[in-house]
Structure formats: C-alpha cells, structure tokens
Amino acid sequence: MSGHSKWASIKHKKGANDTKRGAAFTKIIREITTAAKDGGGDPNKNPRLRTAMDRARGINMPGVNVENAIKKGTGELPGVVYETVTFDAYGPAGIALLIEGLTDNKNRTTAEIRNILSKKSGSLAGPGSTAFLFAKKGLITIEKSKVNEEELMELALNAGAEDIGSDGSYFEVTSDPASFNAVKAAIDAKGITTETAEVTMIPSTTIRLTGQEAKNLLSLMEALEEHEDIQNVYANFDIPEEELAKIVE
Image 1 (cartoon, rainbow, N blue to C red):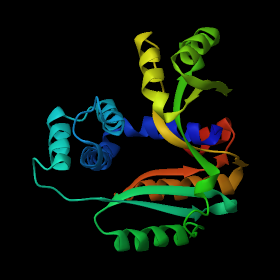
Image 2: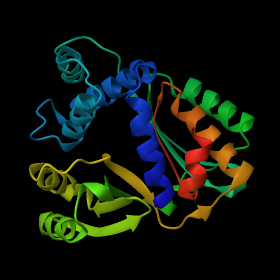
Image 3: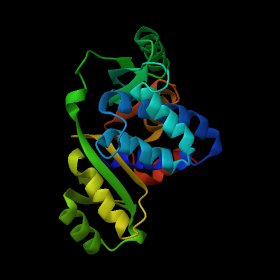
Image 4: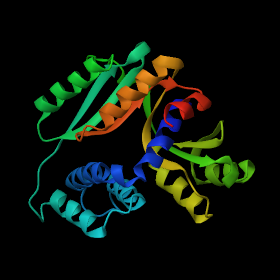
C-alpha cells in the first residue's frame, strides 16, 4: 500500500502544474459524464459523481465544464458515449498492474495499451489475472505535521474508517468505499489538510523495488497514465521513500 499512496501523492503534486491540467480536465470530464450517465446527475444521490466533482474542484476546473459534463451524461446535451475498460497486466520485475479507462473505441485503446506495455517491459495478462490482488478502498493521506495521531485516530474511526496506518511522513486512513465520504467530511470539518483523498484499489501484497527496476516501473506507470483513455493505474510496488523522491526530482 505504501508505494501506491506515495505515487498518488506525486500525481497530486504534478496535477497542480499547468502543464498537466489540460489532460487532467479531459480525464475528469469523461469520469463525470460517465458517472452521471450511470447513476444520474444528482451528486447527493451518486457517490461516484460526487467524488469526480471533488476531484474537479481540486484542480480548479470551471463550474461550467462540470455542469456541461453532467448534462452530457444525463442526455441534456449531446456527447460521446464512453465504455469502461479494464486491463490486467504485468510490469517490470513481475509487478501486477490493474489499469482502468474510459474509451469510445475499445479495440483502439487495447492496441495502444498493449504497445505501451511492450515498449516499457510490460505485457497484457488475461482478464482477472491481477485484479484479485487488489481491493477497493477509500484512502486518505495526511502529512504527519498536519495532525496529532491520537486525534486523527479517534476522529477517523468514529466516522467509519477501518484503519489508520503510518508510512514515512504520512498517515494513511483507509475505509470501506461506502464510508469514504463520511470519513473525508469528518476530517475536512476539523480543518485538517489532506494530501490525497480517493477511492482506490489497494494491493493485498507488495513487491519492493529499488534502482533501475523502480525507475522502469514508474516510467511505465507514467506512460500509461498519460494516455487520454486511461483513468487509473494501480500497481503492487513498494519503493523506499527516499529513492522515490530521487526518481521523480
């Protein structure tokens, strides 16, 4: 889990850069449109939509973009219909990958993802080959300097969190997906700043990577996430914090 949460933190920081905002807007608009199509346009009744809207606010997406994306999903405005795709794959050093996307052409996306994997020492696997290694959880990371551990533990557990862990300079709060919004709301209400907050896929076991293998794995993950059809890439790696910082400098 630690490797994944560190990577999520890096993505969060990168997403704050203007160079990444255009791509982030495209991905979140697709997610909002699909969430509204599948569960309706009311975020109070659609947790997936509410989470996507929170992500949009986090990167300062204009409200009109969000509103139009919802209307395209509900059919009030014309728009492209996206299909959910999931790829099981393996990366360098046998790291298990679970790749999620939204596409208007599954065959094209599959071919392009296969090509990225082959160029970056990875390969597609059969359906379900890696998915069983991951569980859907709410994950909130908070810098240790932002909160007292006992205060966080009492607050989060009372709000429905399953566990509060410690990894390097961060606390990690995990919850069942159904409790995620309540846990996040309780933390926000106390004015505690979160580094990342998302419903994600957490691996049951991790593989520790260092050196060139670590660099190769992160290069593959970044290449996959830069593809416009890909929403999320999950992997069961663990890279020491100090080495991870050197790689992404």
